[in-house]
Image (cartoon, rainbow over all chains, first blue to last red; front, side, top):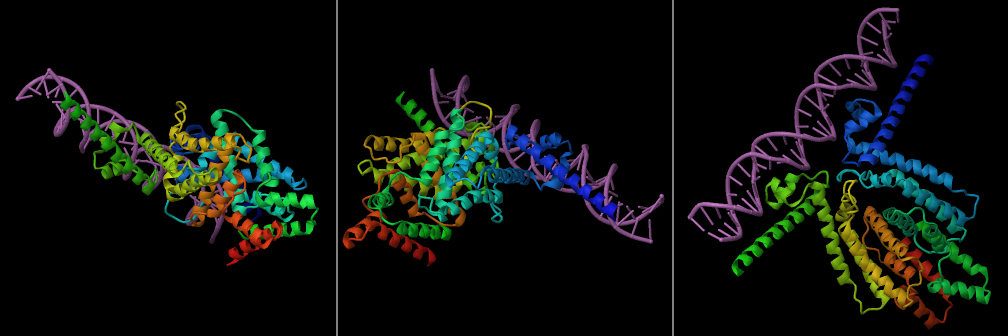
Length: 235
Length: 235
DNA sequence: CAATTAAATGATTTATGCTCATCATTTATG
DNA sequence: CATAAATGATGAGCATAAATCATTTAATTG
């Protein structure tokens, strides 16, 4: 029994290894030739298996592409979690996350592009890209902690802050790629500064100034911070 | 000769009319069935022409898709130019542009989605989407004027500001669609306020007015506002 | 009204995603 | 250990749809 189970396990391992091989091959060819330019035969050849075998692992080309993208984002999530050091102050952590994300977008621009082709054929349920959700959760947790500590000064519902962060970075990555430029430090700095210490604006800024000038107690400010925390958790 | 020229012109007009018909048919079918789900035969049928005729007007399916997207953005540019009234103060203009853009993204979400499939097969020159460039120029001109007048408080390079604006709005549109929600006024307000100095009217103004009336401190009023916001979200 | 040019057609060709009958390998059984 | 059953792998063949092109039809010209 022990032997048979061992055999079974090594069998399963072989299957998983083959799945990884297929995924790696598919990623490479998709990136290299574009989705439409990729033939299933190409992927099979690169993975060194028969064409029909692909369909034992994935229902069709679309499902394979979907899996490629999911694996990519899952991997990215892992990297993001490692890139952020929770011991550091909030500003550093945000900086790390933003830098990591922009870096990833630039270095793997083509793979990111596959994401837009991976949404399932319309019809069928909300089987939207799950891993992306896991990815942004890294950001969400960071912001929630920062909000609890009252360090986030850009007062926005969490979802707006999230879309600002990722939307800005992704569009910027596209611009930088288009111009043939690389990583832009000023962009990251501006983004972090905007979220943590926005330029004086509106009542918020006036209030802050007033507080500083008139030496108002921190208690009232603390109340505001707590309220923001609650508000963001609700949205 | 006049007659012949007239004839020739009406001929050209007929061709252009047919081209419009094809484009409209293609847009409808692409949106309805998805790019992959669309057969050239479907488009031909909808445009009431033979399949082969399509290839007299467009080199292939990809080129047709490309043209559909270009026409869409060109049309959107026209709408944006009309939506913004240059006589109004900067704040109103930005508000109009942001509202128009978010509205367009939401109402024509599927067409916008086609944009990501319209980049030409890789290889071949920088024939990137031109009309999008024309579209963002509306924003650029607005910002340049605002900068000259010193009305822009968010000091960023133009390209960063542009990517912030469009990136945030597009990601937000996706979020709103995913949640099945519609136009979000607070998003627009926050975006405009972030870029410009505090408003003289709107939510901020109401608060300021109330401040003046009740002679309450800004801080206390801010607390009241936040409580109201929370209250609304809970109901 | 020929004659010439341009436009339109759709049967045919070509390409490729996917299926399935067959073969190979692994696991279960007496 | 032998044999049966189950699972995995294969690639020739099928079906679908994009693109082509010889042919027909329509428009333009002198």
